[in-house]
Amino acid sequence: MDPFREAELVETRRHFFGRTATGIGTAALASLVNPDLFGANPNGTDQATRRVPGVPHFVPKAKRVIYLFMSGAPSQLDMWDYKPQLNEWFDKDLPDSVRNGQRITTMTSGQNRFPIAPSLFKFNQHGSNGAWVSELLPHTARMVDDLAVIRSVNTEAINHDPAITYIQTGSQVPGRPSTGAWMSYGLGSMNQNLPAFVVLHSTVNGGFGGQALYSRLWGAGFLSTRHQGVSLRSTGDPVLYLSNPTGMSAAMRRRMLDELSVLNAQRFNEVGDPEIQSRIAQYEMAYRMQSSVPELTDISGESKATLEMYGPEVTKPGTFAANCLLARRMAERGVRFTQVFIRQWDQHGNLPNDIRRQCGIIDQPCYALVQDLKQRGLLEDTLVIWGGEFGRTVYCQGGLTKENYGRDHHPRCYTKWMAGAGIRGGTVYGETDDFSYNVVKDPVHIHDLNATILHQLGIDHERLTYRHQGRDFRLTDVHGNVVSGILS
Image 1 (cartoon, rainbow, N blue to C red):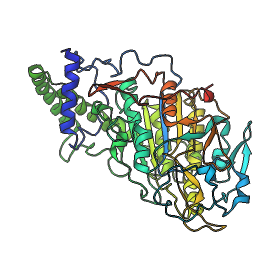
Image 2 (image 1 turned 120 degrees about the vertical axis):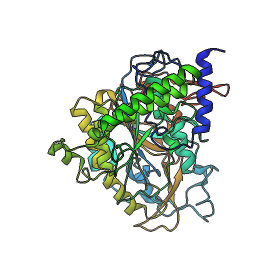
Image 3 (image 1 turned 180 degrees about the horizontal axis):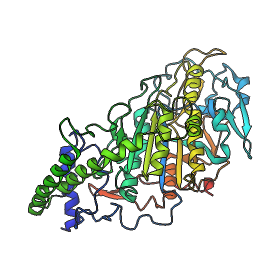
Image 4 (image 1 turned 90 degrees about the vertical axis):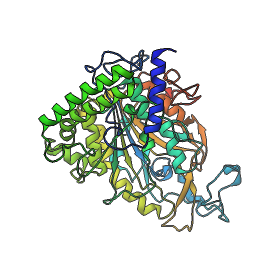
C-alpha cells in the first residue's frame, strides 16, 4: 500500500475512536501544523500551509471568507422579495396551482386553509439599479451597490437541522466536512498563529435561544481534525484552557512542550503514527494562540469612528456587532474562514415584532463590516456572505390579522447576498413568482452557491475531493454550477 494512503487510513481510524474527546487537543486548535517541526509529510499536503498540492486550481479572487449565517431562516418577503400585489390577496387562500402539491411542514399541514399574509413593511428602491429593500434594513440599503442580492436560492430541506447541515456541509445527513473545513483542507492557513477556521456565536438579549447549533456544523467530518473550526467564547478565555493554570509560567510551559516534543518525536520514529504529529502540532498551536488570541480579541486600539460605525453593542463581547468587528480583525490577520452565527430567526408567530428586533441587531453591523473591509482595501479579496438555511412562506401560520402574522419554513425560494472578492455589486439575481413561492428565473441551488464560493477562492468544486469509504467526496456532492451572473 502507498505509505501516504496508509497514513491517511490510520489517522481516520484514530479520529473515529477519538471523536468524543474534549479539550484543546481536539478543539480544532490543531488547524495548523508548525512547518519547522517535521520533515516528513504523511498526508501528501504542502507542509508550509497544509494545503492540497495544486490548489488553488486557478487565480483566486478571494483569499478569505466571512459567512454571516442567520440561523432560523429570515423572511425574504419582509426583507428582500418585494411583492406589492399581495396586498390585494390579504387573507385569501394560496391558490393550489401555486403550491402544486409541494411538501409542507407538519406545523401547517393540519391547517384548514393557507391565508396569504402580505408584508407589513414598506419597500423602497436603492442604489444605481433600483434594488428593492425593506424599511427593516436602512443601513444595508445604503450599500446595495456593493451587494449581489440572490432572490432565487433554493434547497430540498424543509426542517432546520437538515437544512443547516445541508448548506454547511453539502449533505442533509451529518458527518461531512463543513465549508470552512474544506477551505482549510484545500487552501491551508495564512497565519501560523491563528486557526484557519474560526466560529463566532452571537448572543441575542444576553442569550442564544432559537434552534440548537451543533459542533458538526463547523466540524471536519472525515477530514483531519486540524481542519475543524475553532469556536471562540464571548466570556472568560476565548478558548477553553488557553490560559496557563495557576503556578505555571510561560517559560515553564515552553520547557514542558519542548520535552514533550522530544518524547513524542521518539514515539513517532518507533510507530510512525501520524496522530502523534498532529498532537505535537496541537500543543504548539495552543502555545502560540496564548498570545495571538488575546491580541485578536482586544479591541481597545480601534478608533472611535470605527466603533461608532458598528453601533452601540460593539463593545459588548458576544454580540453580533462585536463579532462582526472581530471578523474584520480576523480578515486582517489571515484567518481563512470566519463563520458568524446569530439565531432566533425562526418566526412562526409574531413575526413583525421579532423581525424588527433581529434586523435592528444585524443591519448596522453588516453595513459596517462591508464598509470597514472596503475602507481598508480588504473587500477586494474577502468574500462576505449573508443568509440563512431557507425562507418563509407567503401564507400565515396560525392566526392572521392586519398587524400580526407568522410564517412557516419555505425551501423553494429565499434570498441571500454576497459582496467583495469578484462579486458584481449592484446585482439583483433571480426572480420568484407573484407569491414568492417558486423560482421562475435563474434558480440557485445551495450546491450552486457553494460552487460559486469555491470558485471565488480559485477552486474547481469538482476537483476538491477527499476519498473516504471508497468514494471521492466533495462539498457540492454530485452537482452544482458556478453562478456566473453575479460575478464581475
